[in-house]
Figure 1 (cartoon, rainbow, N blue to C red):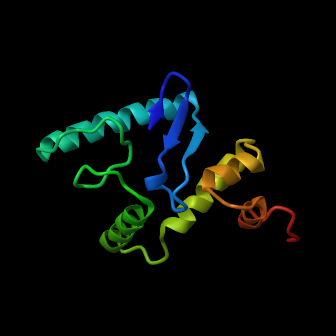
Figure 2 (cartoon, rainbow, N blue to C red):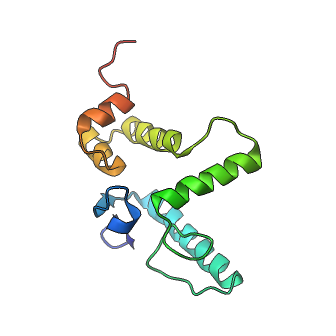
Length: 132
């Protein structure tokens, strides 16, 4: 999924809600964080006697590709474990998009990262152009 040379992350259609492939740019800081995550994944998989798959970055506990549904399930499980009341995967996506906007990323790129069909959906989610 991660192309360290060209500083891109590639999502396969299987991992996306709409089943379309997506490639996004990565910063040097994020690339280093992903390197660490990949090392941790490899250690966890070996500990569970599973074969590490270098192609996947976000993996399930079984070592499979984590799709949007399994991600949602994992967030729900952590919600139950921690006792948090109002958490699900949608606010995580909103926070991600807000941080991108605060860093100066343009709306078209944010919309693509969120896999929105229309930029209007992204601007509405970020409350851009709305009166306060």
